[in-house]
Image (cartoon, rainbow, N blue to C red; front, side, top):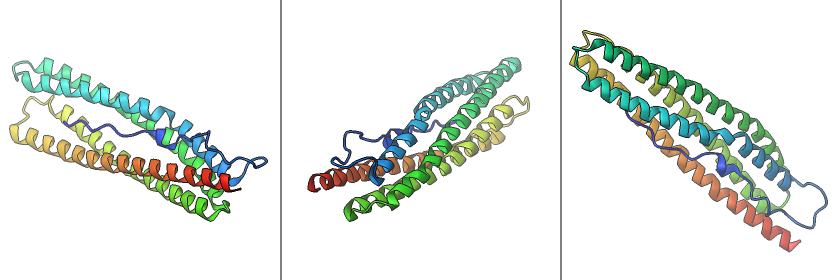
Length: 221
């Protein structure tokens, strides 16, 4: 069983509220876009927390797995008990994964307001940066969806492995096959996690460029 690398959370969407266009009365499309991105960040608030919790359960299961492997077949009750603990931990992981997913889905709903506001920005340079930011957000969410699917599959493979270890007649080849499936799944998880991190970094860069363009535009007006 392989642990996944940590992934970067919704802090990438937090707005820099001091960089607002000045000299304008009321809200304008850029302000509205910025407010919508701030709301997206707020909706992702539990993302980082859930990531830490998931990693904690992964580490716990890794320790339980190692104990199961070290326990001889002469102690089937001990192995069964350890397996049940691992299965219970995996069930908890499923719950936290669901909470994480719900957080991201709520944030996605705010994305419609981001796109709509970006489409109404008049300044050509600011609009170009806004469109670039919108595309980055889209790619980031699409990346998360794929990461979520791969993690679900990996979690399912973990549960199959824990259940198999309870079998008294579990052979080496069967165990090897199960481990291969688990490792293959987590390899995909790590790959998608890396992509998600890259899209998060990219979004940060595009967002900063957007705020710089907006700040320069406000100085010209």
